[in-house]
Image 1: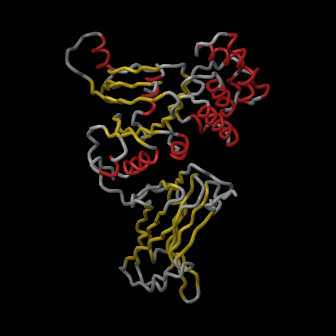
Image 2: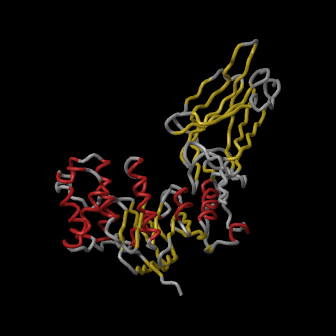
Length: 424
């Protein structure tokens, strides 16, 4: 039987929400027998196990209870009901630098945090060089941390937490700290932990990291564990959850996943649009108008998250407010630095929409395979054309929404050539 590093048994966390501060005071003083609070369950009857040497990711929407369960496992919070059993020394990357004293120097805070984690001065002495090398903030380690930039602060906090040689590493969104070079160093350390057979439990909105590093994933929503299974299965369920298309009756989702018997939130209407960027750039004479748009993955799920190497479709619905001869519909994808990576339009693809009269509508669907590297991108849409030889912009939506590509293998550059390697 495989040894367990973490066992979470029937854990619930309930908070009392009071309408007025006086109600809290009356109850604390025993001045009333009437219940003056509402019960809010951040977690409700959560059960799961993490085997020694396993890497498990927890995913879910904001407010679903992901960070709460990590805090209970690490002892920062106590559960209202249930219990947690942990076998091994834990290092937790939750709120980086939460135990730092802003008046102390970096070195003094290293020893302060090490002591709080249960290390003797001799043990911290042994690890000091590794911590300072990883943080790489130079002579600033001898200055009070209140003088640090935010980047230096998180580098030192991360370096302290990750260099104490734990049996179990608990991570809450901490791998996205610092600049791109420091992030790369953090991920290398993460892989080193995996290769050493350490137990890792982490929460992340970076689905690419969940897919790449995890052996297993757990999906929770509104404090309830919905399912656990392979990262791919859970990511697919999570994408459906985001757009109100998740049904626990779907046989294909239950085949290889352990599904709890739970009550899902009330059904939401099937999402037909992606959340738009409130700061998008919009212009045009509106002779033709983009009414709506969707991005759909290979399973037909409306989502702004696409897995690299899979098919997806961008759909654009147009309405014509006056006669438009030969409209052209286009999309383009930029990276977050604003560089246009790819795009096309109906004229380039030699698929003509044809002349349209006032009141008509048309839906244009662009089918393609996602070859971009795992990263964040911005989608732009447009409808243009020519009238009497003059270029016309009917409607353009620049940076209309975010497009996230998840990948467990990023090659060099902007896109993947899907290379096949043969050795003879």
